[in-house]
Image 1 (tube, rainbow, N blue to C red):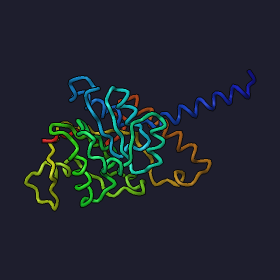
Image 2 (image 1 turned 90 degrees about the horizontal axis):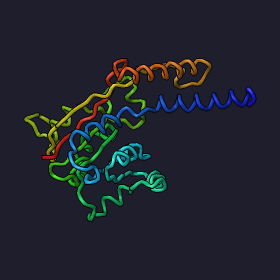
Image 3 (image 1 turned 180 degrees about the horizontal axis):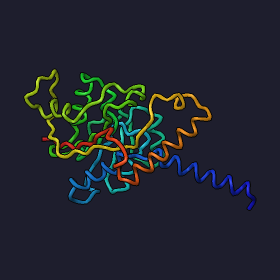
Image 4 (image 1 turned 90 degrees about the vertical axis):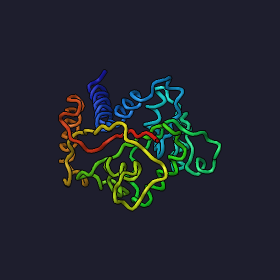
Length: 244
């Protein structure tokens, strides 16, 4: 094997390792830990609805753990891609206009609620919670307010666990909105991610310095993972709510 081929092979493996590390999904292990804690019988007996499933990352993880998962997404092209990968996925329109779909034991809303204004979020959540069995669980995974929260173009507002409790647990709080479904917070974990540089030119304009930024992010991610989040910062939360 020539030195050039060996170098190219090493480069490809290094690049693959880099992307697998920097794209690590910090939410998945937390979601699965919470589900394992509160689902006592066989996983195949639980029907999970993944709202806004995207390209099926959470669906793959849940299906691999043994749950029966249905994904719903507003983008028909994403739905088609998921279906080609063998995932059980339908569009929002198909879901809304199919009253024969049974109720679910678990609903997952991962990185969904921060894309809604409060007046829209209450009705959005209520419409899906109508399909959740009494005693079933809603899992919410969402970011906190950070320096990079608004880097996502359609992020509207970060929501804390208390904000959800005030509306959906209907405590004696002076708020404008009250839900028709009632939830009780059962468990809560804060997500810790690696430290990220923000407001640096190298992030937005590629140059020779961009490589140093990427290496720094790679090292920061590795340190966070190796230290189980100790060398990281809280930037999101995952909560499990029970419908009561």
